[in-house]
Image (tube, rainbow, N blue to C red; front, side, top):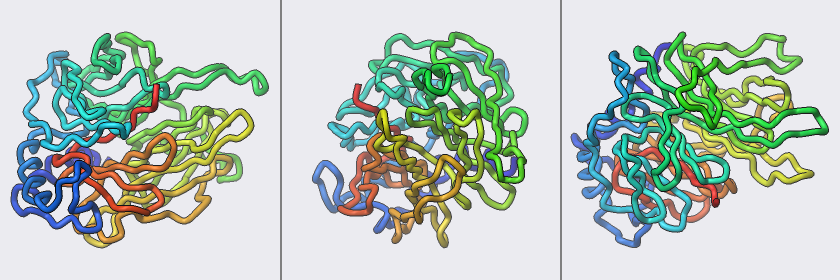
Length: 367
């Protein structure tokens, strides 16, 4: 479990670095922000990072008393909110989620937000460390599962599929999430749960890979996508992290997908009634002194890479972390100490600021 706590509080360290020295961000993000204001991004970003240094995009640990009360927000909103018309939503650690050029108050801290496939509901970890589901306007907030204390929950993701009569597979309506319990494990509850008891997510291996199932521990950062119930997650192997895939369509089989990779986000691009779609994963990999953001296509039938990984931040001079990829696979956004950045997934065009403060990014599908 080495490194779990360090990863969950990376945001605080990045903001502290922004306070100490305004970082150069060429190659990781543009000097022109998405709202069209140029030149002043560096100093403004450092100021914005300083104001949000007390918050983290990753989930707060549950208090030992297991109280459901949320601490008041200490993060100041970014002066820039270029989410309008992009589908991007950004959590800066407080109760308000930046989206569609404005902000929506969810009445409690919003950590690690994840949208349902139809874009109507949001799953997140609240200020008490509990798993919560709410409507897109912040109403109807329900505690899907209560954190018993002594563990940290993080990174919920949706698994929503229709029944498949041809293969006699039932519909699935679940939320996966990570917990520090039991040495970093993955769990699930129903999407309509209320104060439910989560159950540990099963992980099986692909045939032909030694018949050794993936480890049930040292796992984090699940991300689901597509019509077949697939998901990827990060597995810490001791010296580094790898990305594994889990495919419910193949009866919970899975295996190693991308070596030396962490913080994955997963979409299935171009799926239809006759086409399974292309699995695309955006992830973080250490390159030299900094963390870079990569995109890679993977295979779901046997695991493994289907194409070479593409570095979207080849000239990064600061860490680029917590990436998200749009449902159509065309846009990637990620966080830096100077703000949230958006870039084309094919590497063309210029990166642009979305906010001038670090934040956790999620794409909201069109409802």
